[in-house]
Length: 377
Image 1: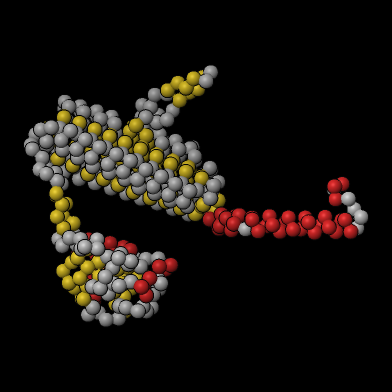
Image 2: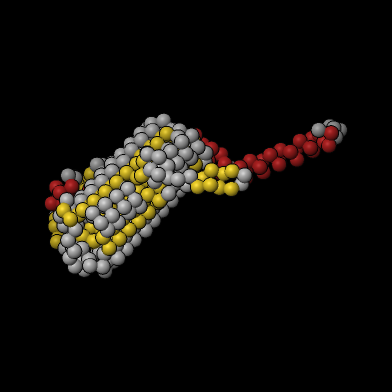
C-alpha cells in the first residue's frame, strides 16, 4: 500500500471487439462450427462447416447465429429458431439443424461469449480532485476513485480497485485488490471486503441491524457494534442490504453471488459459493452452509441452520433448520416431493368442494326418503 496521490480520473467508456448487432445479439469474426466445438469441448452433430457469424438467444437469433438450449422444456424451440446452429446437452441426439453437444450448454455458451466477443471495459483511472479522502487513507497501486466519492479516515484500498462516483466508504474499512464498487454504494465503518469483489449500485453494506428492545410499548434501539465481512470473489447485486452484526460479524462467504434487492440481516453467517436470488430475505443469526441456493422471494427466519447444498424454492418460507442435501419449497417450507403433492392437492380443492356439496345433497335426499330428519344430525 502507498499513500494516496490525486490524479484526474479518465472518462468511463466501453469498447467491444465487434459490438452488438441491430437485434441486440453479438457479432463476431466468422468461424466454422467444428472450430467452435473444439473451443468448448463439444461434439458436432450435423454440418461442421456451418459458418457462424454471431451468438444470440434462441428466440432472437437470426441466420448465421449460434444459440443454446440448456433446459429440455425449450427443445421445441429448435424447430422455430432461425439460428444456424445450437449448443445442446448430451441427451439431444439429433435436431433439425447442426448442433454442438456439451455437458453444460449454458456454461459452454458463456465460455464462447467470453472467448469470441470479449468486452474490453475501460474503468476510470486515477483519483479525481473532486473525490474526498480522509486522513491516513492508504491506497494500493492503480486505485481509481471517481468524483464525489467519500473515503473516510483510516481506510485501506487494495491494488487496482475502482470506486465509482458517489460512493461512501466508512472509517476503518478495508477493501481488497481488483474490486469494482459501482456508483452510489454505501459501505459503513469497519467493514472488511476481500479481493475481486463486485458491488453494484445502490447497495448498502454495514447498515445497523434491526435490533430493538420494547419496554412498555416503547422501542429502544440496541447498538449494533459488530461488522460485516465480505470474502473473496463475491458479487453483490443492486440495492442489496447487508446489516452489521450486533456483536461479532455478518459474513458472506467466498464466491457467493447475490442478486438484486436481497436483505441479509445482522449476524447471518453464509458459507462459500451460495446463490441468493432477488428479493430473498435472511433473518438475523441464521447460518447458511456452502452451495446453498435461495430462489426468488424466499424468506428465512432467524436463528436456524441451513445445511450444505440445500435448495430453497421460490417464495418458500423457511421456518426451521434444514439438513444438508435437501430441496424444499412452500410456506412453510417442506421437502420438495411433499410440497409438490400438497400443491397438487390444493389445486384440486375447488373440485373437491363441489364433490362434497354434491355428496351432502345426496345424503340429505337419502335421509328424507328413509324418514330421517337431516336437521337432527
